[in-house]
Image 1 (tube, one colour):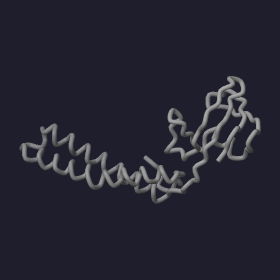
Image 2: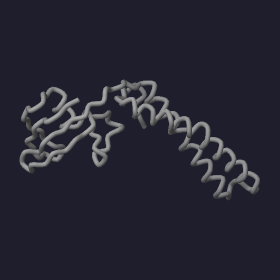
Image 3: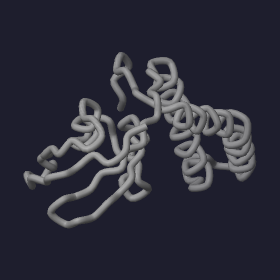
Image 4: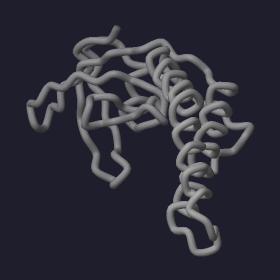
Length: 149
């Protein structure tokens, strides 16, 4: 479960995605699960009704997610999106990343957390700076910041 006093860093896009999910959960999913529970109740004995048990579990999951999103949005700090292009000097490989909040991070989509080693390193760097980072698995990488905006 999420710490209720934690500050969540989000981009505007990440904030909007959470608002959209919250809206869907409240206006579509809640209604569908209420209907599923109603139908399961009509089947009779609730103690041995797998449909009813499953629907109640889904309802609990939906309500928990609603509370989680509401808490994140309540404690959100909006980040300016930063796009960076770095060159991995040892591999002569160039990649572009979007620096986002931790809960939005998706390295496979080119979105890295501002709390990641690379995210932290590029904040204080200028274009053309050469710098080192140590990855979470202990590997040291030498990079050059090519673009930052």
